[in-house]
Amino acid sequence: MLIQKICVIGAGISGLAAAKTFIEEGYEVQVYEKLGAIGGVWEKSRRYPGVTTQTPGRIYTYPDYPLPASYPEWPTGEQVNAYLESYANHFGVVQQIQFNTEVIALNAIDDGHKGWMVTLRTSEGNTITNNFDFVVICNGVNHIPYIPQVPGINSFKESGCSVLHSTQVNSIAQLEDKRVVVVGFGKSACDIAMLAAEHGSKCHIIFHQGNWKIPRFFFRLINFKFLIFTRFAEAMTPKYKPNSVEKWLHSGGKRLVNIFWRLNETILRYSFKLDALGLVPEKPLIEAIVASINMAPTDFYKYIRSQKIQTHKTSIARLVKNGVELASGKKLNADVVVFGTGFRQALPFLEEKYRHQCLDKEGYFHLYRNLINPNVPNLAFVGYNTGFSANLTSDIGARWLVELVKGHISLPTKEKLIAEMEADLEWRKSHGYAGYGGTCFFSSTFHYLDTLLHDMGLSPRQTGSFVAVMQPLNSQAYSNVRAQLQDLHRATKKDVFPKNLKL
Image (cartoon, rainbow, N blue to C red; front, side):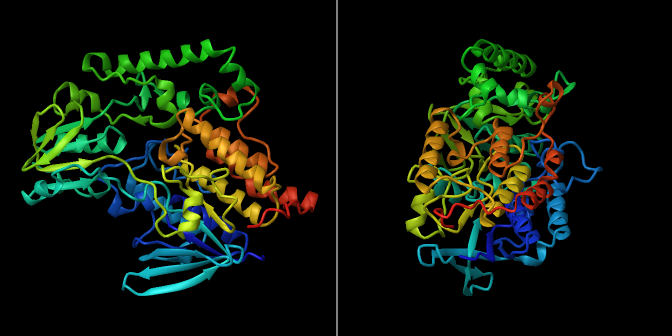
């Protein structure tokens, strides 16, 4: 099947990368975005006041479009959104986006071998249908907010109080002079707790267990990217199909790995005074770095020590009139409850037959390279590789897809692809990488990028010397991938696309 018409669902970081990559290779691309603007999680209606990136900006960037030099090390949400808009305009993506248009159904034509029928609902309520040769789903794992079904929510609301998800906190006015209870201990929950402590009349934060958090600077001097975002640090975590060095480190060199992480735990416990606060996480740091690590807001633990933020390591039993009742029986008076409880995984628009192939009942995605399911032709996912450098992994992932569609990637048989996909997922589930539907790559960005580059016939980046492996991830090191691929194909002039894999 000749693929020419491409549908991209979503205009966030991954959707823009996918659309740009297909456009520059001459494909006819249409992007559908249900919101009224570019940005995804960074779009104005979804971001809370004062939000910044967790990742240093020079890492949180597309490889061929650097952030403005004037941006700070950790750009604000407004700056990130402006950058995404600039990127979309520069590469001619914005002209291909249809805003305020929601994809409500995705149905395969001839089992997907002849493409997909995409049913859309416009802001006016009209329903339209278009056919495409290939569909790229880019709405990501953070698009459906999750609020637990806590008893008493209706009674709480009826008493004039508010229940919000972290994505619904869009102004200080929602918290100002209010008694606020925040549920969760991730980045958004802690950021909003800081806002509530500064602008509300009272702030409580409720969580099952404390997570390890990292400061922007260790000892107020060393940027954490030099300790977390390097090949050296990544080698200290387990990998599926490790290289020879990684294999040794997690067998004969296990003691060195343990010392490395214990030292980092000691630094964090001392820096944040976690022992005195009773907030030392139960899980070791090596498990957190794999799937749930996040950055501590400035002064977060200081606010806890001063009781500006009051912590409760428990769960909510129920919401009651004007308050929250904890599992211990204690009641907290509250005007607003904010759930920083993450997102649920779903593909409600995808035809049921294929939805179950890609996403199982337990909420795990079954995707080879986190990009395709071999049982579902002409459908792909970009942005389903959750980590600290979404721009870069989405860009290289989209490039991998284009190479696949053009017939430049040699893949095993369908049976071997499925076996590899399932073995990879089972390994992730058993080694702590199971978060976000099994799409976690927090400590495996280099490893993942190396794998995609190898598939495309290219060499990895930032390897070799001691200096290279100790340097933080550099998105610009991947800026010449397209040019290298063009040179490679001019040199080989071979179609290595496997005839037994239909897309």
